[in-house]
Image (cartoon, rainbow, N blue to C red; front, side, top):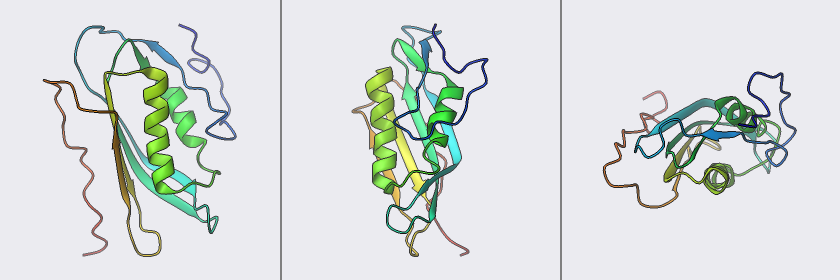
Length: 148
């Protein structure tokens, strides 16, 4: 295991491209199970106005040979804070990067974005068909309802 962040002081990366994700061996190789990360305070910048955009991200995956180390994931997600990006680009980009680097059996991400211009945007992506027998709980984030 060559973790760059675990047990060490780590600064927030300046950008998602500079962020290094750590992967460690799956402690239950050969078993089909689901891992969930929820990031209810994800932040990035609108690429047009420069104003902050906020989302509740839910990442579910069935590990392959490795799992993502949570501190490195937290730093990666935090690196979006001062970067411009459309909701679709951020959500799908996070899912693709994790899938390409970690190579899980399956991964999905739900990006539940708070309203911009009065319209909430939800973005969903998955790496393919979930493995048969994988328990897929609801992501638990209700559709935006405003005050009503």
